Length: 147
Image 1 (spheres, helix red, strand yellow):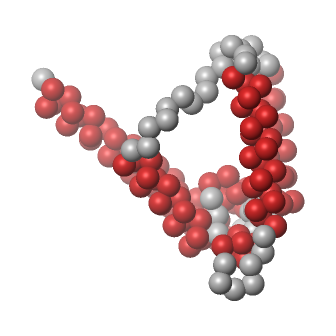
Image 2: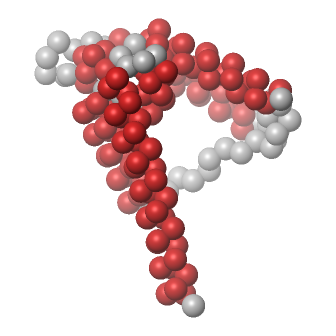
């Protein structure tokens, strides 16, 4: 129960931060991405702040074996830049540039009742399902070839 409460509070703080910073507002995102027009650098400051918070958080987390809630600390350790990572990054960037949303802010905007977020989140979920279907098919092919 304590874990769920902590997850809820963390998500609430994250969502409020996205709303306050303007990250859930596609117009603000488009202003940041419009380098040739009237560029709005305010989201760059939000990103720098998030990177700093993450830097300190991950530095502290690397020194621990368990989380503050007593769960095993599991941090990503891969340094491989492969085809899947590059394609995923390109799709993420294209979606952000076309819709003005990335996954976290899209869910916050959906909760705030933005109609555009419904379409984005539906497309995002469809993409996740497609990925899972492709991943399962790829594993079956790999298993069939290996046997």
